[in-house]
Structures are given as C-alpha cells and as structure tokens.
Image (cartoon, rainbow, N blue to C red; front, top):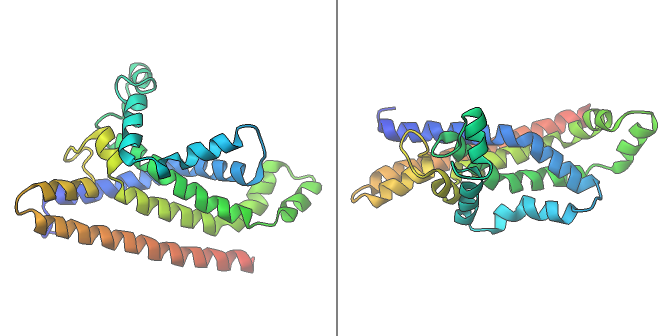
Length: 231
C-alpha cells in the first residue's frame, strides 16, 4: 500500500487495534449495564443510567480531562495501577482504547438495551418457573434473542471508536506510532501547509471503514435474526 506513508499506515492499523480492543473489553460490561437498566429496578438506577449516557452529552474534551484526572500518572486510579502493577494508560495506545471505549459505551448500551426490552419477559418467566437460574435463563433464552442487538451495538460502538478524537487527544495526546489514530492523524495533516491531499486520503479511508462497519452490522444483524427466528 505505497499510496500511504508508513506513518499514515501506522495510524490506520492503530485505529483498528484501538477500536477492536475498546469494543471487546467493554462488551461484557455493556451487556450487564443494558440488562440491569432494562430488567431491574433498584436504588441508583437513574444514577447508573445518567453515568452510562454522560459521555454522550459532555464535550469529549471534558471526558478526556476526567480520564486524565482518574487514569493519568498522578490520577487516583492511574497512580496505584502504575505503582502496583507497572501498568499505565498515559500516552499509550491502551489509553486511546480506554478513551474510545468510554465514548462508544453509551451507544453500545443503548442498542443492546433496546433489544432486551423487545424480548417478552414472559419467555424468561416461563423458563424461571421450570427451575432455571437467572444466569441459565439469560444464557439459554435472553442471549440468543438479543444476539442481533449485541452485534449491532458492537459494530456501532466500533464505528464510534474509529472516529473518536476529542477525548483521545486530551487524554493521551497525539503521538505518532503510540496514540495517533486516524482522526488525530487527519488533524495533524490539516495543521501542515499543503497537507490537504494527505488528509483527504485518510478521510476516504475513514469513510470506507465506517461504511463497511455499517454494512457489516446490517448483514450480520439480519443473518443472526434469521438464525434466531429459525431456531
């Protein structure tokens, strides 16, 4: 792929890695939060709902700053992590993945929650009356029915993570080869006189990946729905 410079190619690969890891790591928590919000009534439910959706309404730069306060080298979580385990999010691709996961999390939870709310609770109640545990009911009844929603939520979160900019550049900066993803690489090219051509190439790649993700979401979602309805 000689029409991309090594630095641009690096940004593309890093964006894909960051987005995949962000979705994979946050998916179990996303399913849990979606299920809790859709099915359970408990004190603090409104607070949980607000916290989950907070990144949607806050400026991304504010989210990035809060991540810096919490997970930076001097953060109340980041400092113990580095002292005890030698692990840090600061100025590393793992920090970019964390920022992308936080920003994509509300979209993932919302999509999965809608699919859970569409499942008739009587199906789960019927399984419970047969003696199945909550975990067994979820695994054997709920999970297969919401699989298209989980897939759609994951791919939407992936597309959002690919486009994440504000929180990433605030939290882990814009370091080529370390934290420079596609959006921050486009931003860098636009700051250089005559860099519009390079920026345009990266924009085309971003559009192609986002469109491919949406088409894949549609195709996989339909395939999963056919499989579930035919089961």
